Image 1 (cartoon, rainbow, N blue to C red):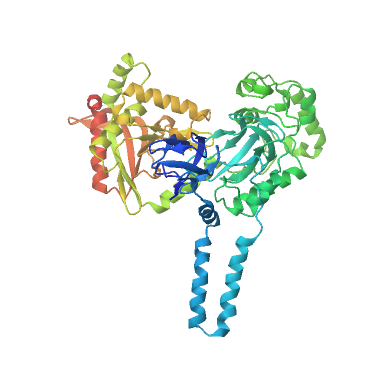
Image 2 (tube, one colour):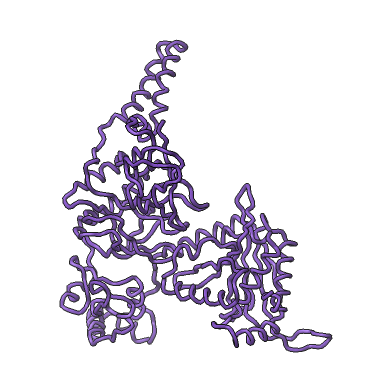
Length: 578
């Protein structure tokens, strides 16, 4: 009997997987243990193994398709076995229930009065008519729908920053189609297909829900509209997996509006005669970072020559650009066009507008949602402790004499926290509703401030790493966070978080727990203050830390014991190295 193979849940946060490649094809003989496909999850690319012997009778999703967990991806059985009925049942979804209805009706005829028949018959007829609607046949259309992928575990939508290809372009597998701003970084959307870009579903700057249609790639001249008709009527081709009508309609509507009116970049006509590189539809080709820096500096992109691929403007072009005399001319033209502004301009520095409204970035949206959920869901309580940092300061000087990278006080805090967590596993936990997870690995999230908000890259197995290794890793995270080069794997999987604002002169603060962690530690700056030692008042170096705890998991005594151990380790730093 044929066996249905479904998309397995390969990680605790996985909701869908992308078929990176099929290593078997329909008709191949398969043995238990053979690798059928490579699946890209939210954390890694993993192998999908067969647990049965037989022939691969059916493959559903194509390479590059996004497949929800538990969706059908293949069927394995005996060679020549008829699986039409099984496929029909799987595609129909509700057909088994529909088949059961006639029996129920038969019982109704015997048990209920005759006049109730119309009441029973009408709804049944309506349910039978829905599957009977003529399906759009898309089996011969050589084209594939491209949907908005889920690029991080918290992503629900993305902003399409820029298209790097335009409708009608030839595309190869591995080409970058677009740049997408997620809640944590700006990432490249890669093509997994060869063909022609037949259809663009979203304008630049628009927000797109995960799984919404954004493009179609296929054979030149293919009837892509039939694919959209099939998607909108939910009669999807076999490689499409149960997407919501709302996401599909959003994609179709965006494409329709794009066909009616193409958005042009201001200054595109001038750019045609200048140095700026533009696409055929007048859009200036520039990376998101280059656009952001140019905007901050007040540069006009149409005046800048790009040195990237295809004349694309990149960060180094902005940094090497010297503003021309065109800028003063434009300013003069602006002043001429608005003489009414002269009285206001008489006061130096007076803003011309009462206020400015800026769209909330994807990162800020997710920060707002997740921290609101954390604060209003998890019952927080706070424990504050002062730590004598005299010996830590002396030890750091000695360490930096031999360390290959400069060790910071934050690195000492990370290492001491990791060592304390090993002694207090009840703090290295997560609340899962009906379960408490005790994490065996100590993965410390380090809050890093970026322009758009906050990222928390993770130092994994921090208790096993040396101070110099932790220092090098944290410095690398900071540099990549600011240049938006962090990947989802860098910020997933923390079990405890540290937020340090000491470098900004903050002496003490409280932090909101970063779910699913049970605790977060807020670290203030080191301050010289009078302290009593051996009955004498002297100047000491004191640092305050505040531990925010989720009371559902960590009690006051548990959190206090952890802080006591942490304090002892920092006040006697040689213990960290043992």
